[in-house]
Length: 151
Image (cartoon, rainbow, N blue to C red):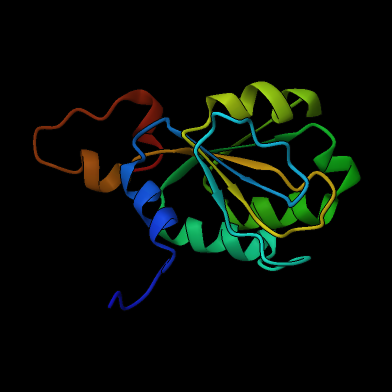
């Protein structure tokens, strides 16, 4: 039996397949998941599981270098935005129009994880990164400029 971390077999398996720049979308209960998307449905009931719990567990297992959310989040759900900035402090943050999050971004994602969240604009994209010190910490390895500040 797995000792810790994410126990859901499908989610754990998808996380293991993610590589640098892959996009994982973690969404609320009302998100229109595209028919052809790899959908991992964790929703059981209202706010079970909630968005922050799922994002926090995923963050414990992934290197996240980018976070994307709807442009409404900073002004219309500032508590979520503040939590995201705290939880993903080392990531680069971007916004997209809400319609793009619901459409184009969902089609780009390697997987869409549906939570039970009843939270406005509760749809967050996570771009996978690399553990820079471990990846570029070897002798005689030249660190690219874009990663130098993270060594």
